[in-house]
Length: 207
Image 1 (cartoon, one colour):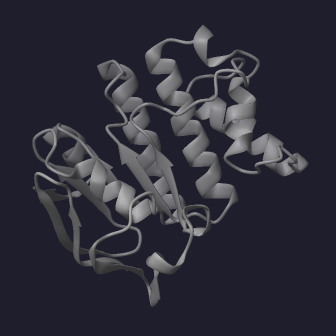
Image 2 (image 1 turned 60 degrees about the vertical axis):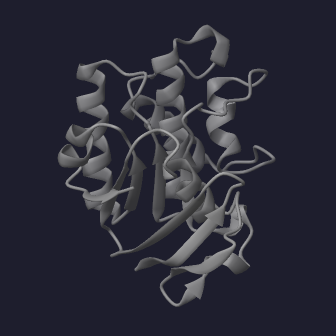
């Protein structure tokens, strides 16, 4: 169970307040207008921001005591956060081991993740050689590989389909649903599209 217990973060102009529970293996869509607190909520769960009030718990443990890299989650950012000087393959590997020291099984998983998102054969390219949609799929491949190899059972997605056409959007949603079912991933997604929430069988949290 992931629980945000009366979590609040104060900006100078507005205070963001969130309170919900999500069962392990469940899915939740954060929805609301731009600036309402969707990305802030994801950043609080990930540990990039610290709440001014409240607690964030996963099972019996408070995540507030853990550094971002020690939390049981993977985060797909809206802007992909790919390193321009590294290849696609290296960008994914970096999410698994900061020193890029991978086992043969881990290397195979990276290749499989690229194939899964439709980018087989793109591993040697740099991010600037890819379209926006392709960069987004690299970010998704990195998140998936990290979840499966590093025991990161929570997957955070910030507007993950914004640069994808409808056909690729449907394929990626189907892929996420398959991986969630197979590996019992807990999913939290920020989106403006009710159709995304419905396709992911997600509960909706409205801001």
